[in-house]
Amino acid sequence: MQGMMTVFWKELADDFTSKRFVILFLVVLLAVGFAIFISVQAIDALKEAVTTGTHFVFLMLFVPPIDLPFFMRFIFFIAFLVPLIGIALGFDAINGEKSSGTLSRLLAQPIYRDSVINGKFLAGVVTIAIMLTSIVLLVSGIGLNIIGVAPTAEEVLRLMAFIAIGTVYGAFWLGLAMLFSIFFQRVATSALASIGVWIFFFFYVLMFAGIIASFVAPVGETQLSQLQNAEVQIMLMRLSPIQLFEESATFVLGPEAITKMQYLQLQAQAASKFFTPAPLSFGQSLMIVWPHLVSLVALTVICFAISYAKFMREEIRST
Image (tube, rainbow, N blue to C red; front, top):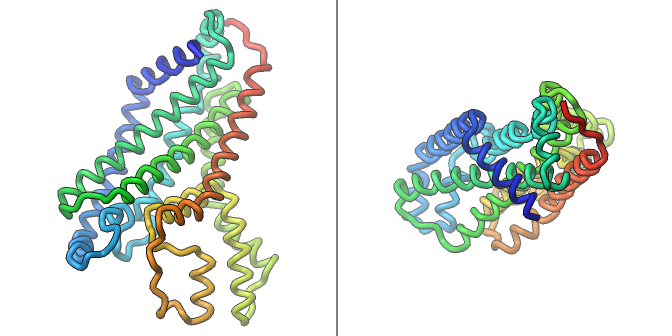
């Protein structure tokens, strides 16, 4: 345990003093600037929500009540940003130290081998959590100045849940990057492999899900065929951790959100214009996102377990 904490504090200090952290911090500032831009665009709607006594006004800073394209929303930007942070922290965690010869010197000290990988992974997760917390706090501070309404206890719990979900989401990409860092000798190869997986999940899963769904459940003229096609497509999209995070964050930050299948069913029944979703309680929102969160945790554990087993068995020679 002592050896793991030694590696943890060393890696954490390196993360916060390296040039890489400066670049990541600038990326975080861009994310905050984008979130502030959304808040400013929604200022009229936020003030109207305050005057009408709408529930969860503070959360509208993160899920603005205006018709914005999805790629301009806060959740989408975080879904895009966090994988890059996780990859940047982990793609050279092991092979970078191998190539520089510091890993063999580190293991020559009274530090167990598992303490090295555990400490590196824990330091990366804490760094991601600090960055996400900084984003939420900065947006919240700007929001207090804009609307003048403090968050309620439930809104604080929802923001904390969002940070926890985002941290698990980032831990998956960190574990994936460390996995490639162990399996590939070259740093550039592990970086390209990690980015390739990110591109596949971010861009191609949606396209492939639509193509496969059209073969499995072709769209016909009936409403039932359209629902079946949409159900298959959504189920395939949930194979992507990005989709799992986006849905989880939407339900946590948007208490009035409904599932995609509920929305499609309402559309098919021509009843959506008569439907006003009631805000879900915090417990109900957690029940909805629980399968998504378990899936993200399982993917993270699988990546880290494979990395752990490979790292513990491989031969490391001094250079």
